[in-house]
Image 1 (cartoon, rainbow, N blue to C red):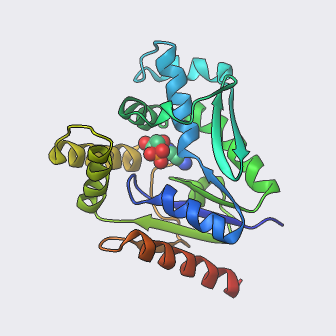
Image 2: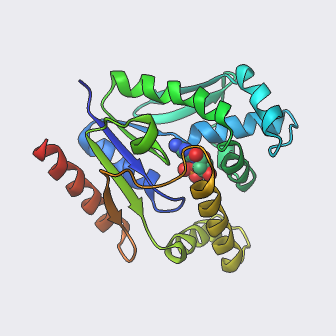
Amino acid sequence: MPINIAIDGPAGAGKSTLARAVAKRLGYIYVDTGALYRAAALFVLERGTDIYNSAAVSALVPMMDIELKYVGGEQRVYLCGENVSGVIRSPEVSKAASVVSAVVAVRQFLFDLQQDIAETNNVVMDGRDIGTVVLPNAQVKIFLTASPEERAQRRYRELRDKGMDIDYKVVLEEVNQRDYNDSHREVAPLKPAADSLIVDTTGLSLADSEELLYKTITDRLAEN
Ligand code: DC
């Protein structure tokens, strides 16, 4: 049976960077499920459909052609045959992904895709509902978090480094808004699974966070 490691947590906790690094060390495939929701959101935006109209968004689901590919261990997400791994990172898509990910039909559609990958591969899968919904039998479940202020600081620095002129307060507001959306929606809200291990990276460097995450996972695997 393949080994499945579920990593959930709020936006900006460093999940994708840390999960990718740990997957590499373990020799497992890293699955960034947020990219799937982002691709679905991009599809909705490209169609000019109102992201808040869940009936209209649901009606688009059968037309969504989303695929994950792995090139040299790196995940690429394809929408209707086109590599959209870069464009799905825009703030517009981030916001739309947070909204359309609350639509049941979108979640159901992406659920199968995620389960199929985990059934046939050793994976480190990161998202919001991996330990609670997608991989309830994962051998290790992690809830990776950090304070909202710390997450906003990291995001702020990242955007400034990219040359964006942005206010820290606006970034903090966005972080709080996304946390609220992700944890208050009716379907699959963000919350730790009963059996998840909490890893809090507040005040830790990236290297120390990685060590803590790696050790938490390998200790738990050794117990199994
Ligand atoms: O992790 P991210 O920022 O790329 O995720 C984008 C959005 O998708 C985020 O607002 C929450 C949503 N999401 C989700 O609902 N379930 C997942 N497993 C992954 C992401």
